[in-house]
Image (cartoon, rainbow, N blue to C red; front, top):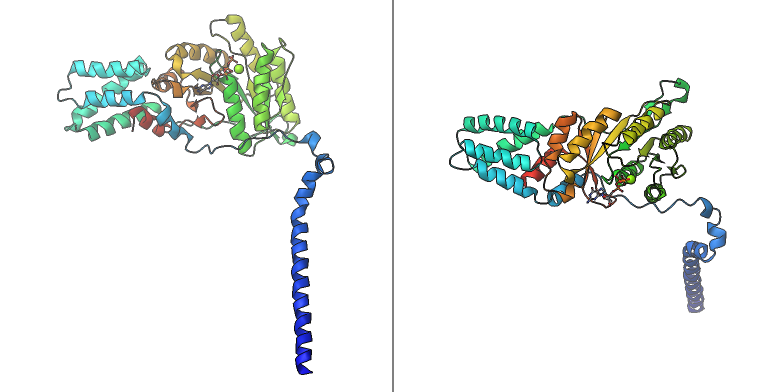
Length: 374
Ligand SMILES: Nc1nc2c(ncn2[C@@H]2O[C@H](COP(=O)(O)OP(=O)(O)OP(=O)(O)O)[C@@H](O)[C@H]2O)c(=O)[nH]1
Ligand SMILES: [Mg+2]
């Protein structure tokens, strides 16, 4: 009898275990089946989202450390560092040797003024140092190059929203960035890359396609906007670029955006009509409030020619920062020194390639180390 009871109890327990396991399995399956079901019924699951689905915004590679890529991309830069160090480590450093140092620097687009200054200071310091082993010379050269680049200059981009002085009630207005430069320097690409960094930083960005010369120009900006999740304000092809810029800034303020980036048409600095038009673009925007940042985009591979452009643009729109693009395609990084000296305006960003993440905040130390082929 007792044994029979035990057998019955065991059988009941066994049954409970089996039923429990089966229930657990079914529960697990059904909880997993949620998303699967959604996928099988796209009409029901996706319909409400589809019309407003944001474009697929690409993930962003970290901005920090991007500048370090310059070392490998500043093609042939080692030649500058090695050339200078070779010269400076010579047994005899006579006038002829110093002239060669000057030549190397000028060939690297450092510019005559900054080169003279650098050589002057180096001569004094090398003479004072007494010994001239490569490490000492290298340290001196690094220090002097860095001093010339300006390690303490404020290179921050004014892209934070700004307290709206005109109407305290409204609180803040978007930061307005105007991007200018000659044809093909990389303006549109820079606007796209910059929008990408800002959006990844949690900022809302509106793009203004004030390059109304070609429909393709606005399309190119639109492609960037779609990639990064920033809407684009466009105008009719051949329309007035100042009014598109004005609209973009107005819509940026009305829509509560953090930043409005305005792309402009490439124009040669010697085309007076086009330069006047650029001045108008800026003045028209300023009817609503100040332009916080005017970025002049210069192609590093154009060397000293870039300086001529820089001067004229600075006269027309008072540039606040320089974006030096295509540094990946030149051995002549010295243009950084020359252009800053020329305009008294810092290089704030550098383009290191055509890819979406190839834009870096300019870092003087990393730059000098890249020049020296550290
Ligand atoms: N290697 C390299 N190419 C770049 C860089 N920045 C831009 N480019 C390329 O330069 C070309 C011109 O770039 P855009 O952004 O269209 O130049 P833009 O100044 O807007 O040209 P316009 O509107 O015609 O005046 C494109 O092929 C870009 O991919 C860079 O930092 N490195
Ligand atoms: Mg363009």
